[in-house]
Length: 179
Image (cartoon, rainbow, N blue to C red; front, side, top):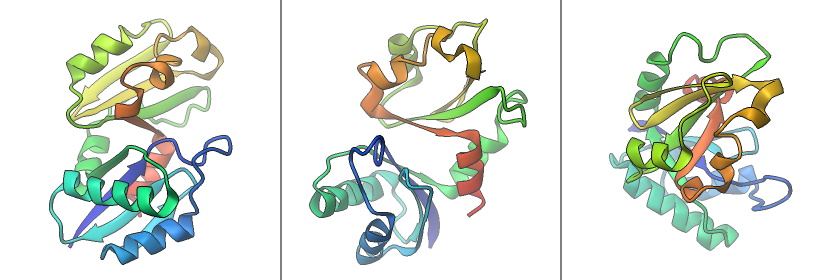
């Protein structure tokens, strides 16, 4: 069995798209996934499966959420090994202990390409944000006090591709990799 992480987009945000983590774990078990565990209340599920296809897993989970919770939300599934590889290729400036900097990892859902992503988002403002991409993920950091000055802040939620990306903080990514 291979270990995977499912990242559900836009659940339990400001009282919208509510999903109980215990019910979600029960659903994963009913799908035949082993050892489901959740982290935080924002849709991070770690599980094991014999299925060796992230897209197939994503579709199964999307249907589970639609049937059980009546929500049609994007689900991004990545193997734990691939996520570890991505984290191991993080730039030196990403995810350090500087509390003034907000470090994120943006996951591009297939078939979204870097080119489409950057075309939609535009260039980051070098004075306020740093980016680096690797293996269908984009490392993105910016100063907490200057987030409104960044080019990407509002676009991640309000662009034509917002439903084809999901974002996690450096701390969340490191925690789920360690689970």
